Amino acid sequence: MITQVIWADVNNRELDTVYARTGDEEIREIQFIICRNDPPEKVVIPAGVSGQFRMIKSSGNFVVRDMAKTVQEDGTAIFKVAISDQMVNVQGTGYYDIRLSGGGYLYTASGRFIVDTPVISTSVLEDVSEVNGLVFPDDFLTTEDHFAQIDDSIISSSSVWSSFKTNAVIEEAIESIPSPIVAYSTTPVKTGKWINGADVYKVVYVGSWSIYAGGVSYLSGISIPSNMNILSIQLSGDANGYKYVDSPFCMVEGDVLMVRNAQFNYTAKNVIIEYYNS
Image 1 (spheres, rainbow, N blue to C red):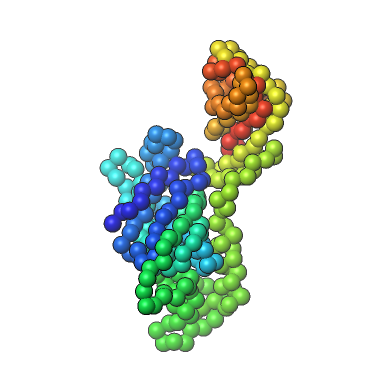
Image 2 (image 1 turned 180 degrees about the vertical axis):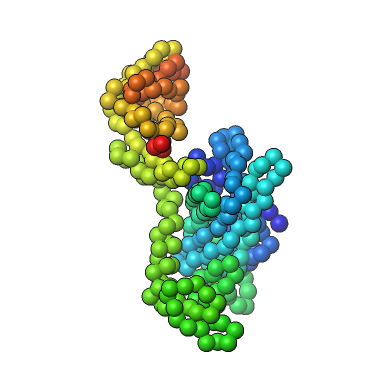
């Protein structure tokens, strides 16, 4: 049964926290609805795109599961993953991400995975790594005749990778899972992928700009390159002795950023711009 629905905004790589309990395996299902903006709008996902759920448990072991994909009549894409016993056999806080890829499309986003209250039982499930229900590495080292050959060059049911190759692939996979912590910097920081595959960046400009209500304010020192496609702009500063945060109506005149018809007069001290380059 579906026990949690998460709206995955393609403009935001941070996902809601998944909450689960030990012993909930295979009876709970997490549903990810792919959308854009708030309130959410549907996003058309190419037919060849598949989804994968990847998790790092609090123990350091990992779980990888393919997600089931359905498309509703209105075109809304939904990806589902069932909670496995290995996802919830260790209490604590881990991290997960979803990866949608295929046909030139790539989207990743991540969040926390919290497992609460260990089940009271006479036995404890052994904590292992798992990929789509197969235990790693035991289930990957066996063929029907039990004589698997070591071959690092191919993926085959009649051969296996060496421990060196296996460890390298696992480390690469774990490193590809983005950190859920978003860093802010005065130099551009890559935060995700846009729907066309372009890298999305976030940058902070620090200074002092007078923003006027009902008028036009030019932000000197902030030059917008012609290839910069702005996704969001946020200003923060002081207004009549109060701290103020604003997402104003902005325009680019030439290559200079300007704010039109702000709600209040205030002094902006930080300008955060999220964008991708064409």
